[in-house]
Image (cartoon, rainbow, N blue to C red; front, side, top):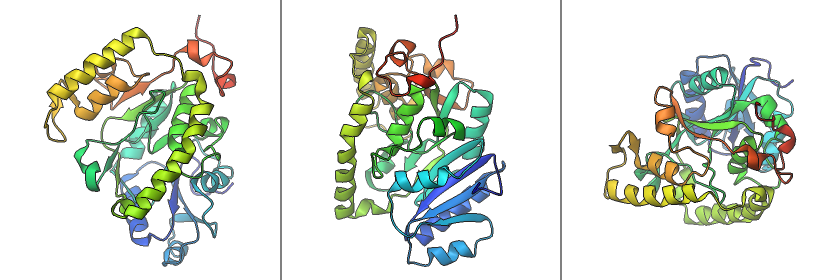
Amino acid sequence: MLNQRSDYLVILVGSYNRKKSLKRALDSISRGTRGSHEIIVVDGGSVDGTIEYLQSHPGITPVFQGQMLGLARSFNQVWREVESKYTCWLSDDTELVDGSLDLAVEILEKHPEIGMVGLKTRDTQRTGVQLPYTGGISHYGILNCNHGVLPTALLRAAGYFNESYHSYLVDPDLTASVLCTGKLVAMTEPIGVLHHREYINDENERVRRKREAHKGVPVYLEKFQFLDVPPPLSFQIRSLILRHLGRVLFANAPRDMVRFGLNKRDWRNIAEGRFIKLTDPWNNRRERFHLVQKIPYRLLSLNTNPLRHLVAPPPK
């Protein structure tokens, strides 16, 4: 077993040649997480002093892989040696908001029907600062968790990160995979992560990452093809109406403006998130999570669901 400090929550942080950013990420985790946890930093062969820094850090478990293996393969090698109740993934250009991991674990403890809690993420660079938070909606209408906390046993059962991708789209794939097991996926209501995408000002790097992400799209579409059925007419009508209302209500609105208890990103996600109920704001009005997604059993039970073997039958 790789983790020796805690078998409750194990946090994986990927790192490569960003020592300053990594320090900020690790400080934010240590400062803002009160529950039992262990931080494992997975380094892909840094040459900027990161390795020496990690070797001298008494509170970190470092894994030096010596080369860039790609996020999926890199993290999976480590996860296969981890025994813990919960786990999550972060990158070295993230900054954790105080209490975020404690909140996510608390939600999972109180609501075992939830399989993963997404840490709501806000970008701090370029156009991302104009949005209340990030998180795309996939071709199949699934709201992505950029960073999430989930039971390690569920991660293992779902096959860890899908190594058919190199790095990009592993998080949308895992989000969809958790839903395909019949579990729910929820998002923290408060912002949980600040993402300082340092590459965003490098045009060549942005193009490279976009190209890499496009390569993975066919993998995602094929794996979850069983969801490629027309949504109910009621959803189509609801989506059309809400999108139109959203454009009117939030025209030229500042980032954090709230209408009927929702900001413009919440509104969009409820309008376009295929597996989020229209009543989600009311259902979760007393909770610190929202945007709960659940795939209906009529779809989960299809033989073409790649994780159908993990789906429990509905209660009689």
